[in-house]
Each structure stands twice: as C-alpha cells, then as structure tokens.
Length: 206
Ligand code: TYD
Image 1 (cartoon, rainbow, N blue to C red):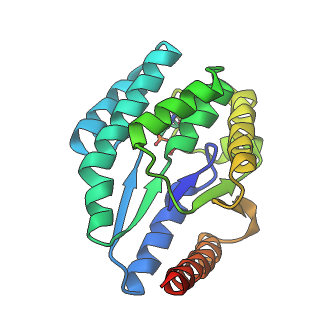
Image 2 (image 1 turned 90 degrees about the vertical axis):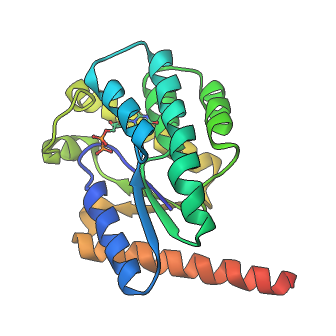
C-alpha cells in the first residue's frame, strides 16, 4: 500500500496510525518511504534534498533510489508476507517530475517501469487536501515547499491524472474529513475489503 499527497496533508501521521493498527490486528508490517527506505537510497535522498538540480538528474536519482529500495527492503518484506506501507512511490515521480516540473509523462512512466520492474502497489491512498491549506499546515519546510501553492496545485493535479489512468488502484481520503484515527479507520476498512475480495478471487480460481 502506498500513500501519496501534497505537502501538509498529514501523510506521515496517517501512515504511522495505519501501521500501528495493522500491527495490533496481528499483521507483520514494513513501514518505509521514498526517496529512501534502504541505506543507499537514504544517501541518495540526502543528495536530492540538499539542493536544486536539473530535473532529469533529479528523476534519475529518484529512480535509482527506488530500484535500490525495492531490492533491499520492499521485495524481501513482501517475500516474508509483510504488508508494506510506503510513504510516496512512483506516482510521486509522475506528479512532481512529470506533471509539475514538466518532464514528459510517458518517459517518467517508462523509467518508473524500469526501476520497479513492474512491481506496483495493490492500493494507493491519496490523502487529498486543498494545497493552500496544506502549505499552511506544513511544519517542516524544505525546498519543495518553498515553491508555493501554484506548484502544489500542479502536483495535486498530477496525482489526479494518475488516478484517472488507474482509478481502481486509488483510494482517496480527504484530509479535512476527520481526525488521524478516523482517516486511518477509513483506510483500514478499504484495505480489508480489498484483501477479502482478492482472496475470494484466488479461491474461485482454485
Ligand atoms: P519529504 O520531506 O519526505 O516530503 P513529504 O513529507 O511531503 O513526503 O520529501 C520528499 C520530497 O520528494 C517531496 O517533496 C516529494 C518529492 N518526491 C519527488 O519529487 N519525486 C519522487 O519520486 C518522490 C518519491 C518524492
């Protein structure tokens, strides 16, 4: 399960809440993030967040970090039967590098595909917020947040474009629609519903 959203939506709080509840329910959970989530990928993250750079260079670094993160952290966790929760994933490259920074969408998609070798989340949560409200709420300013509300609006419409392309993968929660505990509850209900649907499908295939 991946979590996406613009700045200040409360994604990190939500993901921690969802992880804690799944663990209480007896699931083995791996909670991770992009860029980062493995030793090399965390070093690449530090380079990316340090200073602005050419958008293509930035994209390649995100994809390099992603390939490494999948190899070292995500695939091994999935092999152990863990539920993997990831704070941002390839939809962020589409929303930020393609839609907001202007790199061609199909090329970013192709690089996502190369980095992931087709491994895709079975559910992506969009924690949606009015970008202006989000920016006011963001307490940890970094260089991306400096780019202001117009940039965040583009990022948001990038997520919506991804969602239009694959509506079934996405589950949207409005950040203003409840406390973190209530939002986590909504996500978990959807997760359980989807899990029971896919196990019924597996059973009927035999
Ligand atoms: P972070 O401080 O983790 O932001 P957040 O808490 O909002 O997730 O910084 C990650 C930044 O990297 C964030 O601004 C989004 C950006 N990003 C991309 O531009 N492309 C990507 O592929 C990924 C994974 C992240």
